[in-house]
Amino acid sequence: MSEILIAAPSAATSAAGGPAAPSADPRVVLSARDVSVRFGGLTAVDAVSLDVRERELVGVIGPNGAGKTTFFHTLSGVLAPTEGQLLVSGDDLTGAPAHRFAMHGVARTFQTPRVFREMSARENVQFGLDHAGRGRPHAHDAFDDARSILAFLGLGSFAETPAGALTPSRQRLLEIGMALGARPRALLLDEVAAGLTEAEIESTAQLIRRLRDDLGLAVIWIEHAVRVLMDCVERVVVLHQGRKMADGTPAEVARDPAVIEAYLGQEVA
Ligand SMILES: Nc1ncnc2c1ncn2[C@@H]1O[C@H](COP(=O)(O)OP(=O)(O)OP(=O)(O)O)[C@@H](O)[C@H]1O
Ligand SMILES: [Mg+2]
Image 1 (tube, rainbow, N blue to C red):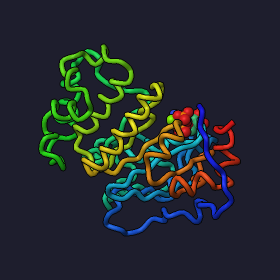
Image 2: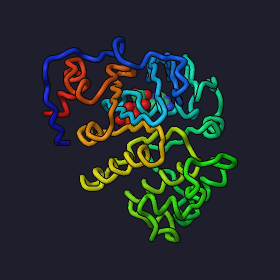
Image 3: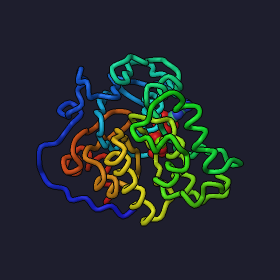
């Protein structure tokens, strides 16, 4: 990866000084409070707190094994935290199953895309509309229809193509379409640009902005393509060895000495 980040001495945004102290702010759609996940003796997520507000676009970065995906699992109810609390729009869903998180408006993609390969692209999105999104109004009326979701994603001409026949990049878009079918308020994207060309990664970043700008979603985006992510989001959270190492604007995080030493320094090399 050819990431270039300019280090400059300045105030760092450490986890302690970052802007993510949990609060009763009604605009907070998703709130993790001191969330830890342990697998036997391994602490994969270590007392991470994060508040994500309506229409916020947050990037999550960190080295392999930092706990990013495991943290997403807790934010979406796939995995109950060993310790800590999860609130969705102010409701305590700690320990609730994933479908309850979905009914509360949290949708996600998976690091390995999970599409129904034998079904058409349209049927995949329809599945999202019929199941996770059932009974929930969408912010956009047009999004009650699978074809309009596919058109938004640039997949309009692939509506009847079996998902398994789509390119990997289009399968990733389709998974976003399935998540949109759930009519979310908050969308969690786990490496939706992994394995894509640089041009595809750029267009994925543009799409992610439209998810927020046009659909009004809160978006949390895990990605290893640090430069593209930093250019796209307005807030970056750095996870390192399960802990939240930094939380601030891309500019603040890029010049945080602890982040440079532990993570970005390797990326620049
Ligand atoms: N089900 C599990 N059982 C045991 N250990 C696990 C399990 N899931 C994850 N881990 C471990 O937890 C740590 C965090 O893993 P996680 O997948 O959350 O990292 P990540 O930041 O998403 O990494 P990557 O960038 O490679 O996707 C790793 O050490 C991983 O091996
Ligand atoms: Mg991961």
